[in-house]
Image 1 (cartoon, one colour):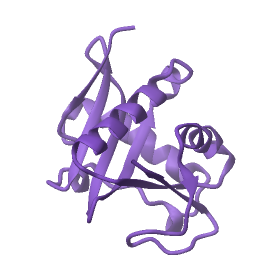
Image 2: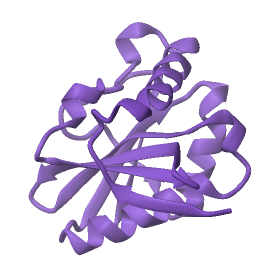
Image 3: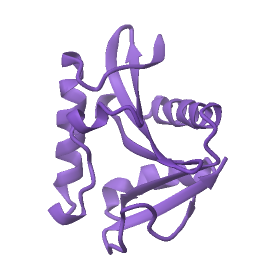
Image 4: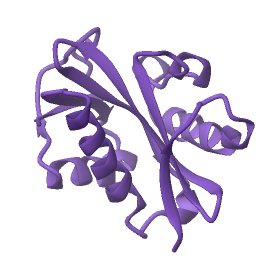
Amino acid sequence: MTLTIDLESPLDADLDLLFQRHTAEMHADTPPESVHTMPKEALADSAIAFFVVRDAGRPVAMGALKDLGEGHAELKSMHVLTEQRGRGVSRMLLRHMLDQARLAGHRRLSLETGVQPGFIAARGLYAREGFTECPPFGQYRADPNSVFMTLML
């Protein structure tokens, strides 16, 4: 396994498959009003650090950190291609983003994820890394289809 993680532009053409799969999975069993994915154009923002995991140069995962201000950041758009799951890519990417959030001076990292069965593995990973459930944060509102989690860094 020759995995690398780098800060990249979400607009790079070779990331289309990651975005297509991410969007399709988020819409597969979540009502449209509860889907909070950001289009790649919105991720190309100076307040967002966008990371790509590559295996021998091929993009296999992505994730982003959005600066919410006052030492608080949000984990956004974390996705690993289905055929790459089970290799520890998600954990590696999450830990990298935790390190990057600390280096950027963030004291808290929060996220929104789904309650549907397809999100069980993600919620388990976040919990194993120390995230705990919390009330909605930022612009989010209570939603029966969402789970909000946070971690003090």
